[in-house]
Amino acid sequence: MIGADVPVPVKGGGHVPYANLDYAASAPCLEAAHEAVTRALPYYSSVHRGAGYASRVTTRAYEEARDAVRSFLGAWRRSAVVFTRNTTDAMNLLAHAVPRGTSVVVFETEHHAALLPWRRAVRLPAPATPAEAISAADRALRESPIGSRLLVVTAASNVTGELWPVEELAKVAHRNGARIAVDAAQLVPHRPLDMTALGLDYVAFSGHKLYAPFGTGVLAGRADWLRAAEPYLKGGGASASVGRTTRWAASAEQRHEAGSPNVLGAIALAAACETLRGSWDAVRAREEALLGRLRSGLAALPSVRELSLWGDRAPRVGIVSFTVDGWNASDVALTLSEEYGVGVRDGRFCAHPLVRHLLDGDGDGAGFSAGGRDTAVRASLGIGTSEEHVDRLLAALAGLTGR
Image (cartoon, rainbow, N blue to C red; front, side, top):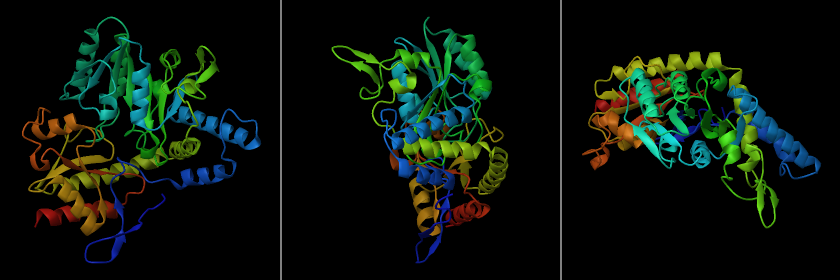
């Protein structure tokens, strides 16, 4: 990790090593990603449209990055892999590309990136159990009008870390003649994902959550809707021929990657993908130990309440959100930073309906806007998290609740 344990100032003078517990927002850069960019910089040039040596080297590196992402996701070899800016951009691209009249089914528990882009969508309420999520999606898809259908779900909640039953939901979607799009932004930094084995039609994620913070995201999946849609952005590279009429590029990638792409971001992302592919067993074992340490420590603090959609035993990745009795979430986060050198996130995490549901039980937020009472604190783990970081957070919260 670059920047691991960087010193940060605290009240009273002096510095402490930074305890970064905000990986779910943006993860620090892996040394492997930094090194890949450093190697690429001497040959950094435009891609696809240059005959010079540097351009050819950069084009090859860019397309190899696309292949690395495809392998990382276990995508079918003919799947499209379109580089975007982030998950939000990827989901908006898919919303742009779905056939007109497509019926979209989405849970209100989604991150706004997956909740908001759709022209027409049925929003399902927060399910009480994974089984209820499956049955609700099945029912909604069965009742959708005849025509194209799309189910949109998260793989892991960015609020609670809970894992969604995407394999079962994919089966439900296909049984009803629908496709499934998965927001994997919070899963892929923590667990492997195999699109082919799970039966996923589309996957979106962000590089800045995958230890490659260079403004790159991905939409991967079936190419036909993407090839049939007009370019998401219209400009150089998206066009095959321009005259009195315009003929657009045939491939999904070229059609939707107009302009000069973020080549260095793609190269960094590919390096992060390759690094994680060889490390999953160690990453998962270490994270589960740290997550258990964190959750048991929070449970021992009577003034702290962990937020959960499906209960304590639901499987999850290293993301925990909580409230502290008598404390505004923003004050907790600021105190943790200024006095203890601990970085967390506070707010509603771009998932307002879900946070409101977890706090007031129905998601309408009535009476929960005054004084920031509709917000929470989120601690999220990553490759650079240590036991000391977790223990420092727990000790700090114990100190806060004892004031």
